[in-house]
Length: 170
Image 1: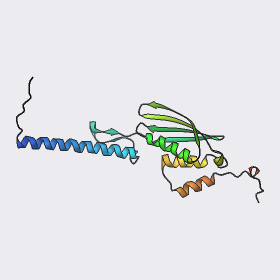
Image 2: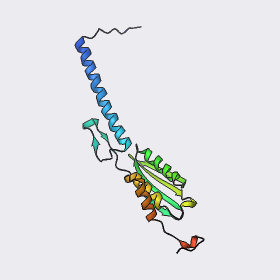
Image 3: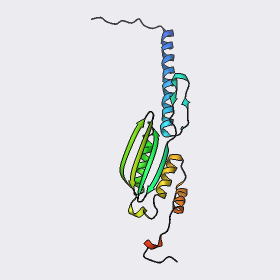
Image 4: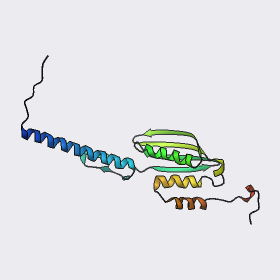
């Protein structure tokens, strides 16, 4: 059984090791901050963050397309591998608006995830259609508007069908 003996380091060597350790921690901190920013969605630019081999590639911006088919919604979503929170938020918005998610499928190609969500609009939302939900989903993915603007946009999409009401519209 051999024992490993190490000579004590000189003060200068200890300082050098400490400096190298601090530099490695600073580098790791910068990488973690860049990843945090990317995950929070604040940096959705094309290209790379950093220089040379230390770069962390950023994914392309997410994309969403919503098709209304009768009482159903067909949602196509393209996101980066690290943008799963967008998918979860889409599902949350659908549930919040009373839509029933019937099916989801996905495919991963390189650093992109392609998702399809099939949802059915609840009975109370049929007169409005998918306009309000579509507006909310688009606003979440492409940019936020305040709630008042989203509500106004959804009212603009409402089509009044007097034949479904039990009273005459004057």
